[in-house]
Amino acid sequence: MKARDIMTTEVITFAPDTPIQQIARTFRRLGITGAPVVEGGKIVGIVTEIDLIARHARPHSPLYLPLLDAKIPLRGQREYWEIVRRILGTTARDIMTTPVKTVSADADLEEVATLMVESKANPVPVVEGDRLVGIIGHTDLLQHLEEATEMPEDEAQEPTAA
Image (cartoon, rainbow, N blue to C red):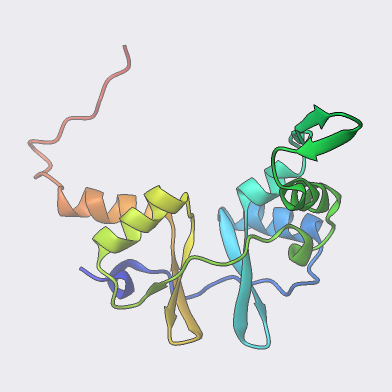
């Protein structure tokens, strides 16, 4: 089975200048976990629930090694300033994740699942060339797995709470 067989084709997208309050409201109202940020017909980033939540997380201060009268950073300063930028962000451009992990419409579902697990990517935009044609989230894959392994109703048993 291919990505095109399970992808959602009506993709919600945001412009880079979309306020984060509008993004959060859209996610909640539509029950989605992420959406591509599109500018000039091209995907320039993706905003997810994690990007919105990360704005409220405690940033890790940069670690320094004191040496004589100098402080040598142990981790990249760019990493720290990226976290600060996201915390202070007010638009999609400020908090979006780049580069965007995408799959082609002809990708096998195994490739999609591997990308999601290894890159912690959810959802994943589906592209044909540079054109956005769909999106696949965890729920789409779970639904496919459920349908692929479905038992006849008389054999199926619902789990019980302990």
